[in-house]
Amino acid sequence: MQWLPWIAETFARAARERKPILLSISAAWCRACHEMDRTTYADADVEAIAAERYVAVRVDADHRPDIDARYNLGGWPTTAFLTPEGELIGGGTYLDPGRMVSVLRQIADAYAALATEATQSHVAHTQPARNRECSASGAPDATQVFASFDEHYGGFGIEPKFPFTSPLHLAMELYRENGDPQYRLIVEGTLDAIAEGGLHDVESGGYYRYATTRTWQLPHREQLLETNARLLSAFVESAATFQRAIDRDRAVEVAGFVERLASASGGYRGSTDHVRVFAASTGCAVTALLASASLTGDERLAREALRQFESFLLAAYRPGHGIAHAVDEELRSLRLVADQIAIGDALLAAHAMTGDEPYLMMAEELGHYSLRMFAAGGGGFFDRVREPSDVGLLRDVRFGYVDNCTAAVFFARLRRISDEAAFAGVAEQALACVGSAAAEHGPEAARWLLAAREVCKDATDAQRS
Image 1 (tube, rainbow, N blue to C red):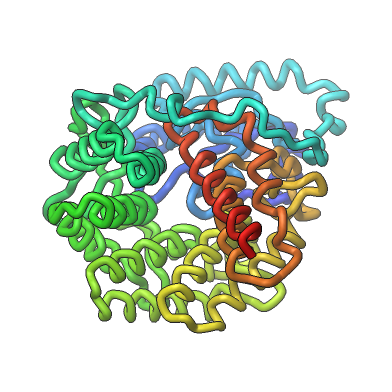
Image 2: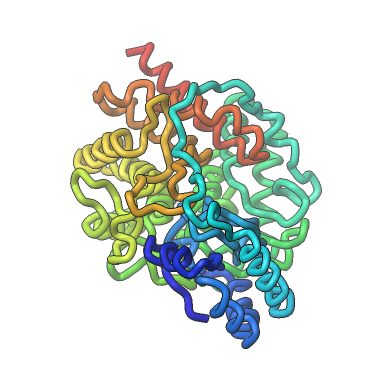
């Protein structure tokens, strides 16, 4: 297959040729993506139809999470069909060669029949998200978060099983407050099941992305930096909360795995299958490694994590222009709020460990940059900076649920240690904008509750001062 990049010129070509777009969203670590390349996209009939009747576009989900967030249709690979204006016609995930040939013909025929002068001129694009009134009505409670806890096999839900960690952090906070043994059971039952089941790769010390069965077996064997960094943070907090030696040992093991993803140019590779370093996952890894070093008293680990972090910052940070999504030329100009917040969190962790003021100063700079470039007039944060060349759904800047929960935590922490008046009230507004959506996220509604508790700490400290 001959793939074209996601750029305005590609969509202009589709409009000139009056062809729909075949969009493939894949990832270097995705085994099913490689299989579809090996079979479906190597099939002669698929190649011939795609070349004759489509403009084919390939997007890497790690390179362009903003595109993935708008067009992903349930997993990777995503196989989507778009108009030349970038509007979604339909699609799905994995398609074998026979099914792909049939779908390609059906979509192309339907598009040709509908390609009237009106549809070819300029369809109405999704308008940019307007400032809206923010309200926390419908916000979740802890009962909703833990409703899907699997008492028999740990974790949340039936299958597939993902290693959600935000509900574990919430359970640990609640346990420290009231000592309810049910919260300890949730944390230890889940972490034991994850560490002792098929999700754990005993050879590398790392963990796979998810398991396909309720009993944590038959994993999809992708090992991502973010998955392992989040599990590292959970093991560290569990070891500190419950004083179990096994959790400490697990933290040491997975920290070693994360360290082995270090890049020679700074930061940490996004997966075992991808050489690129991405800002958000690197920030998450640095925060987790510093927490692990603090737990174990490992000065070498802390020193190396800070060295990798500083090397990445030198390449990715530009004063007044925030953090680039990645440091190679293709992605240097991409600015996402998730990257600013994750690096900001890591800077606060580095400042807490070392007391060095430059870390705090840079965190403040990223806070100001985020407010300037991503903040909505009515509160909360959009996911990305709009560009004049944006096409399709990229014209629609969005309030991400996870983005605003993590932003609330960051700005609440930043406010407590900074005297910058601009940071006052920012966390509360970010929370309010996604409060009504939190309950839709099942166990991940814990992100909102954790952020709300962080904001409450901020308010309490402000009253005391």
